[in-house]
Length: 281
Ligand code: ATR
Image (cartoon, rainbow, N blue to C red):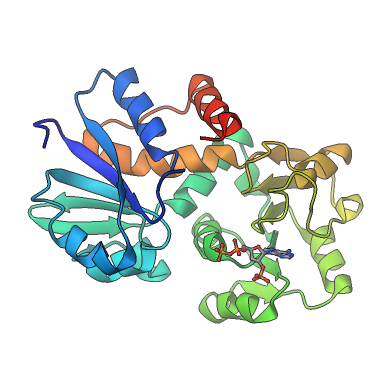
């Protein structure tokens, strides 16, 4: 193993992770001697891998699908975000103990801070479409930033109910098209967390014509960068933020912990990742 500080991303499968490209870019940009590797680890080997991670020379790691919940149970010290979400994506050692946090929510809010400055002045009412894995971290981060009422609309009502169970003071579920329309009218921020749009054509139900002109709109899908959802919002003159920067800003948390520098999200980095995505690698 290298004598330089090394981190890795652990997932299964892992071939399409963009993390090595992102961290490799930052290491070079900051002139740091460090390494960031890709580790494909099957679920049955995950516990063993984590318990020998330090011996392998790693000072920390990102954890991705399907290991985020298993990692939560293995870390010795969980921060408040990890405790609330019961899933971690960023690991690091401190005085021999393995620490864990979840940076997905911070990635989401930092991305909006950069793309839509002042967005958090308009979150008394928020509408979220979808209730999948990423939604829990986003709801948690929005509440931390002061969101009032969060309306959730999802194809499978049980998944929305699970979120309402956890965040009952803040979350209301839209169970009909009429309730969804009311949520569009009230929302200062509308977020798509469904996977609809990945194919470049599908879109969750939109009623942007009902939105106030100052409503902000964002999508966590980033291929294509301008999803049909964002395109429709723009047509109604609403301010939008793409989903790609969430990927970068969630990565800044680990990079800062392992290598001691808070890295910058540059246009060059965006282009690098977009080129890799376009090349289909
Ligand atoms: P996860 O993020 O948990 O892995 P996912 O399958 O990627 O889940 O789906 C993320 C979100 O997109 C979910 O809210 C999902 O809705 P369900 O909870 O009903 O599965 C939503 N979604 C995915 N495909 C969809 C479709 N064809 N129509 C509507 N919603 C869809």
